[in-house]
Length: 598
Image (cartoon, rainbow, N blue to C red; front, side, top):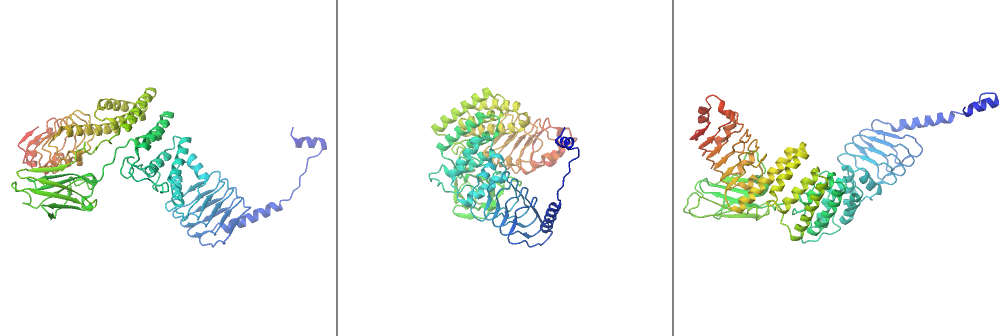
């Protein structure tokens, strides 16, 4: 029995209530009037001071060009919403004092206020688009730090970077900030990324000391991290790197399945990025050609290449090895007829790279048909960074720690991949057998990425073979029975004359294969090759063996017409051999061939 029933029983009558609805009606009318005033469609000039103090649901809906008042102050609103479109100018200061759920949804071009201050917001959300700007130093709010901890979207990090830049916050202070975030949550990938951009500023590897007042980077948090902490523009001193190894190890031992720390660890293990330079100059007297190789892909048509022969600048046209390669690490030019064809003369050539203020010399001696000047991959530490004794011992200790972790987490793909990278950093040739075994385990553990692991393993096997070739100082390159699924580092094979790619898993020869400008014999039996796109303008190529592949059409072989010296072609075991009159068609297509095997 409720209280009303009790009163009725005691008094013998039903209770009566009387109250006036007049104040409520007035309040509704006033609220309705205010709503009409502020819901506008086009050009409504607002007052200079727009003050809301007692409105329960203030709504400002504006379209097109609506200048809001100088100070826009919300002091006691439970649910303020500002919905704007197109060009919505915010006030010059925008202050939220005690709002529980402030939401600003802005579209297109919205300059934010002079100082943008959140002082006591429980759930601040700012959704803004392209042109976000703030013209003066802004105070760092603890609530922004809270948002970065709890809600780490890219926009928050972009906003923080902007605030840090205009406020002149020291780099060391920002690094400490990442320490706090990482300490509270190892899974905060953005914090690890931000740390990778701060370390080169605070702990540079170059002799020049970093100033703690240098500004942190302004790039977006979603952009890719630096290629490696060893790059010339992002080099980190070794002492700090060793400390970072310890920090990140604590992270992935705490949660081995979290990818954030593993990605950062992979960045720490990154190889040194090569200095931009001319790595090789090759001269052929017979073809009167000059081939220039660079340490990185460039566009020779825009970087300013100048060829000088015997002190005389030459007017030449540079081209890449293949028409599809607009940015290429290798460029070729043909000299005017008779420039270097006489074998009784000696010639001195110089290639100037005017953009980088560097050059490379090459001498073509009497009686020589070709000459080159290059740096070997071993001299340049092309595939791994040179390790000091201290760093080598630390990485060896890291390898042991990861091996122990793998014993506890045998199915952890991140641990397996990191062990491979550590082995590559320490001794790629010495750990080759173990690396292959770990790759096989990776494919079983993470079968969804089998192709990725196959390509990465192929890359490492090619690197090892190049190193072995460099040590042997030969021009014969064998990659048979390596289970290769892709080809890479082909710019390092400029001088190779014989290559064996048999018994692999190759589906084709990519455009980069055309960089093998000295190739004479190509053997690629027992693959699944369907196209020969990379066999393009190889002027010295004489023999091609493609037994047991997947060449099906005559058009697949049309690219071979660009190789004028081709005399022997082996197509046994290909579907194309089943085509009627294929021998006569091939003889017509490739008249230079003297030995055709079908």
